Amino acid sequence: MFRIRCVVQSRRLSLLVHPSAVFVPNLMSWYSAAQMHVFRGETFCDVGVGSGLHAILAAKMGARKVFGTDINPVALRFARENARRNGVAGVCTFLHGSLTAPLKSRGIRVDAVVCNAPQFPGKDVQGSLPGRLKASVDGGPSGGELNARFLREAKDVLLLGGRVYNPAVSWANPSATFEAIADSRFRSHELSRRNIPEWGRGNRTREWLLDRPGRHAFRYEHGRGRDSLARICELRQDSLSPVTPPKPIRAEISFHS
Ligand SMILES: C[S@@+](CC[C@H](N)C(=O)[O-])C[C@H]1O[C@@H](n2cnc3c(N)ncnc32)[C@H](O)[C@@H]1O
Image 1 (spheres, rainbow, N blue to C red):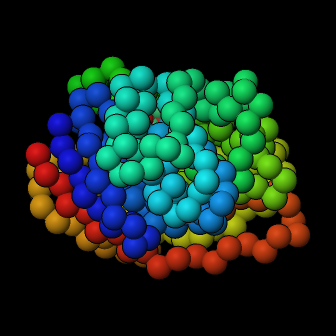
Image 2 (image 1 turned 30 degrees about the horizontal axis):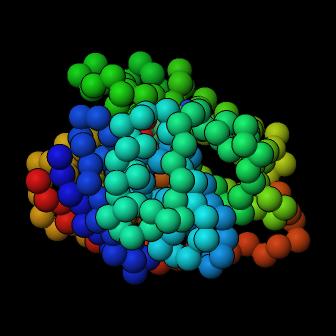
């Protein structure tokens, strides 16, 4: 069991993680958390909540109600505990189920949704990962199928003018993502695009953190290596509302056993 202390968008968070049962936030998690916009009083959903990072951050940014969904019951337990530790349990509800189905079945719609979906091609998912973690990184045969499914379903749980924050990576069949965005009539605005050299296609972030406890600051670099390109997009269906501006990337993390 590890405790991650981090500062994202000037909010201080403390997260307990269980590296063999719950997805450890990776560079894409921090990157998307650093870019998402949450406005005071909004409702928010974190799809595939894992340890609860985006949900808890949304609550700390002033969301009045936050939902998190996951198919991993252990992740939901950790997300609940982390929400309690960060003093936001009162606004967070964590629900078991696939993608947005738990909201849809309850007739819930929200202002904004984030989903850091698994995005590795099934065949690349490491054999040594515990079963629950395989589902955390397996995005389908080409890597992009689960994210595309999420994008097609997301509109059903969005309020008018609602937004989706979607991290997408260059190796996970980007055309599946673009088709799903077009089919859902989302207007896509790229908030940020970076290469993540230490991560790359192998996604060793969990090991990277486990090997190097201590303090980490992000260093993203432009334009090197095609395989590790990551982008964070904001999607909207309402063409009248202005797109929100990108944010400077700042996240600081320390990792303790
Ligand atoms: C890449 S991890 C992201 C976790 C967390 N949001 C983060 O950024 O650190 C993906 C998460 O989605 C969950 N997941 C996988 N398939 C899912 C599905 N069909 N519906 C909901 N959650 C799913 C996994 O259990 C895992 O917690």
